[in-house]
Amino acid sequence: MVVMGVAACMPPAWLAPWSSDVAAIAAVPIRPLEWTLARVRRALRPAATAPGDIDERLRELTEDRDHYRALWFAERLRVGEVEARLEAVEAVRRLDRSGARPISASILAHVAGPGSELLAVDVGRDAGVSAGDPVVVKGDRLLGRIADQPQSHRALIVPTTHRLNGRIDALIDPGSGGDPSGGDAAFVPVQLSPQGGDRLVGEIAAGGRVAVGDIVRLADPAWKRAAQGMRLGVVRSMRPLDSNPLRLRIEVIPEVEVSRVGVVVVKGDAEP
Image 1 (cartoon, rainbow, N blue to C red):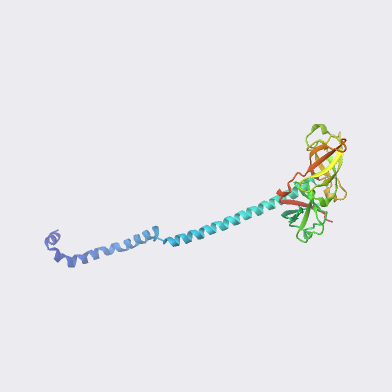
Image 2: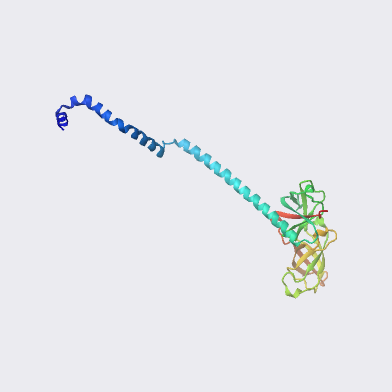
């Protein structure tokens, strides 16, 4: 206490030379703690980054996000296509009694050219596809048949409404469209002429039990056995012929819109 009182009475100029040394010696024990706390502070609050570096990093992260998002969507589409193929094949197997071998395929494109209306699929001879094989969707909806000379990994489909098919023999199932007046009436034979686009036309005798909406099935020996009994479409309209009121002109339309089909099944020849 006496020393401190004496030091307090001394002029400041006398105290400066030795008081700074005393302060330095007193600070030595706390230096390690100060350095440690400074390092913690720098770790918790990193040095400021230049705006240009932030923009570049953000651009890289955005590109990575878009890249992996695109891969994810592509994989989802691929999985969806595989599931659709499996479902299409199973639907054919449940309804087929011909012993045909179902071959799933995807529509690649509508073949260019005025009035061509042909469809290209991603299977061909290497998968067992041959000319005339029927092509179906939803189990038994007949879309068409394979054109002549399929390639090794590609083939063309001639839709049922294409004029290349010529006349098609079919049977109308009265009452299948929900009209109870059809009852258990016998099948009504009809010969249909493809008109291109989405329709086939034919004639039947008036006075029968055929009604709009009745199902029309293929029964043509010119088509392969696996196509027999498949659904060509439904009756859309009926009207008397001007030249013969005792006969009706009917229009049949497919039950599947060709432009909206993505996956089909080719009913190939049965395996030996």
